Image (cartoon, rainbow, N blue to C red; front, side, top):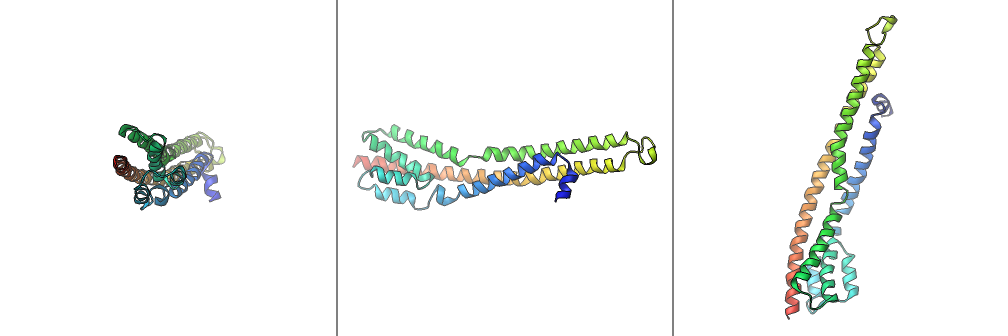
Length: 213
């Protein structure tokens, strides 16, 4: 591996940095986007059951908020009525929407960086290719074996080819997985956001019916 890095030249180092950052982002998103941390399956039903006889107290609301992303959205609805029992439907929905926007920002965190790596890695590989081509053309103007002009330096020619090919390949190796994982996480986040929206709508109807009774 070290010999490949040496053959690829200095343009390979930005790609290595991108690969390390991309791997760290992928691992972080896999850990952070677990279903248990976003939308626990029974949490909405439990929150509705707890509040059948009235809005729970601050301790229960705080515990719910710390449970998951969905818990934070539901807790915002409870807090609306805890702070103002006469809050209107518009106030409730505004509170839930605000919590939903915060949840969306949390779920989409680092996806932009992963998309940037997927876009930048091929360009960095292309930069290495161009530098390798410059090395190749530069070798054609140097004296070759025996000092014969125009024959080119075989070592410099080989180095230019290595830089061009290794950087092109490594740029694609970094970019393709980054693009795949970015699309995967985007689809996963979109599914979570839809589930959060449906859960918030159901919870809003529950709280409004609860207040009527």
